[in-house]
Length: 279
Image (cartoon, rainbow, N blue to C red; front, side, top):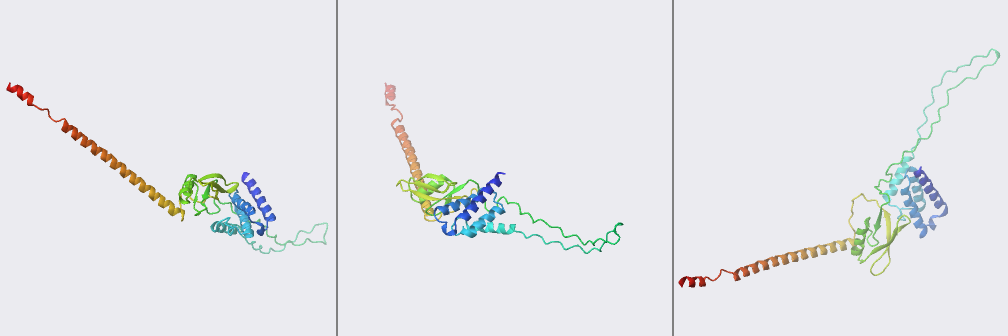
């Protein structure tokens, strides 16, 4: 099956890495390769055997210290591996001794007898099967093919590019920031630039958040975004008040003009009619 093929390829890659690089040699590009190998675990079946290989990598290279995997995830993997190693059940006690039975003596050999037969040997039990792989063996809600942008200033993670742009332009104070290159399956980093043409770089990590879950943005970016949002809302309120005041002034001026027009167009002078009547 496809998952088995992926498992075999990933195991072969792990074995090759273990035999090729001692811990002291895992630096720079080699550590990036190790990080890609650890993230490749998410493409496998993630069963107990696959988790055991991650545990082997951690023992040899200390993945947690290298920040290639978090402590909680590594603890969950080790727990699952330990639970999968169930000792085989004890052999059942031997059957009680049966009385010796002598085989019938063949007629042609009157001076020979058959050897007594003892109890049969206990059956050989097969080793217990490993538990089936869990759908989420890590205890995490990992959404496949979803990656988070990590701010290189405060470490905040977001999976929405538009939110990340706003975060970098406002929180990190990089006007005009934009992504120039990102392909986390080959290189777990994002690359970007801003109005100053300064190259920027940060990490891409698999998303481990629940869908719709949002976390508080740490300082300094969080306080800057809150301040900018407060300023924006204040400007909006001020502009709205100014617009309402302008509309109210126009309405008031219109009412005054109507009153003046009514005064100018008052009742006609009836003096001529009165003169005609006197004549």
